[in-house]
Image (cartoon, rainbow, N blue to C red; front, side, top):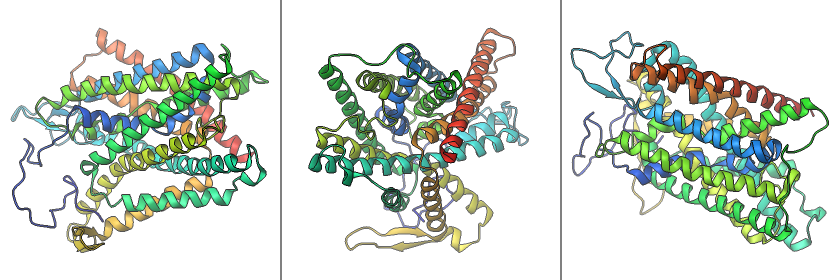
Length: 484
């Protein structure tokens, strides 16, 4: 459908005036730097998850809530550092799986994607499980972002209606049909954006999306702070929202942990981001600096938004801070914040979906090398004055089906907090913890029972327990909502 990816196996459809500069692997020279790296990370991290943090803090309380966010920030940083070391790995024998260096060459290969790193360092037996979970998560992000966008569009409409007719006016209610229409509009926009050729063509979109994420997080922070100061009191309690039974409290805490787990990690796109960085200074050094800047920035915003939201609303903190209508005025600022969320999610959806698109393009090209449907591009000029676009039929069909199915699932399961928590809990341990730890141990030849190995395995076990607890609680929440 789109112009070919640099790693998609297709040749460029049009002649280039000059030959491009090449990197050490024979691919076009990468041009990313620290700030494009940070922009990509923030686009992937500060998304729909930030809007649920006030609700999460409300379930955990004033002590456990901030501590949980700091712990997940630390876990995310450690995981990112471990994975950064895996971008370049020793060439391995054809059987794979050992991570041993090919003594005949002594060369280091680039792992362009998370899956490439798993294949190179851990072998094929890990690839299938990793691929299933990774693409399920990426696909689920599309569903969650579709739900979020529909909620934001509904909030803008309702905010304007409340301003015109008074808070709580009956005519301002929105029905299920209207929410479905908003989801369809978002799906149509994503179908157009899916024509972006590949991940390396998205720097501009990530920069816009990162700016939008800072904007709406700052507005949420400012509104929460203003309401707290205006009320003259800090609401909430040490234990969080009181509930009738200990079991109900346990499930809510588990869902809150799942929401926080969803909000932080960006491990599954880290190597794709690192692969956009120029080699001088070394991309690993730039990536490590980018990890520090991005994790510090997101943690600051997360703590501020989550804590000031809880301080403003206490136990009544809405599941979605900017669409739950704790804030009504100034209505134009609430509208603007929700518009920023929508713009950010437009880019975030593509940032994650492009990973699936790239893998599917490569698979089709390898499986059907002689097929014109798969490999041929057709120059099309959509509007006068615009350059011609390389239209590929296989990409057109697959990406249309992909966007259509994410939209359909969002229509069936429109549960914001529960869906976010379930996605975060499902992939937190295997993708964010277990595989990066194992790959790092192979890459750095960490021997069993050394202090480093023991520390990493303890980290692994603790995170497994936390992820399992959150997953069970989120499944209970989705089932309860669907049956209720």
